[in-house]
Amino acid sequence: MMSMEMIPVLESMFRFQWEEAQQCYVLLYPEGMVKLNGPAGEILSLVDGKRNLVDIIGLLVDKYPQAEDLDKDVVVFIDDALEQNWIRGVV
Image (cartoon, rainbow, N blue to C red; front, side, top):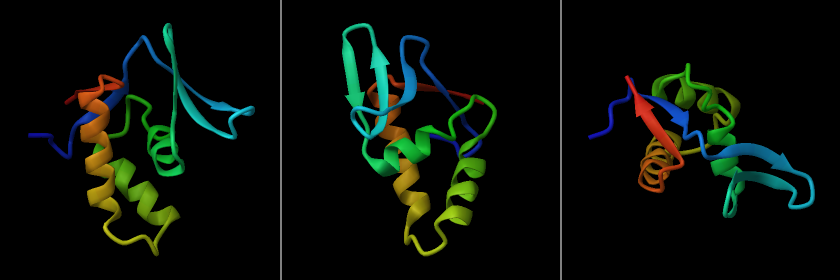
């Protein structure tokens, strides 16, 4: 099970960036591109290899105090990103 102290790190084969032509954040990799929706881009923009999940959730709650169940949504996305091998977790 994923720990809230886990520090997510972008896998080295991916590059996260804003894509002006798509007007969204994307993950670039050798075979193509993953177009991210707004919330996914917001979460990944905070994945810097230094912040743990508690820190990331805290920053997002501060930015979007009206969002309900934000912590659960972040955990679900991070879990999916781990399964997709976009990120890995370090403790």
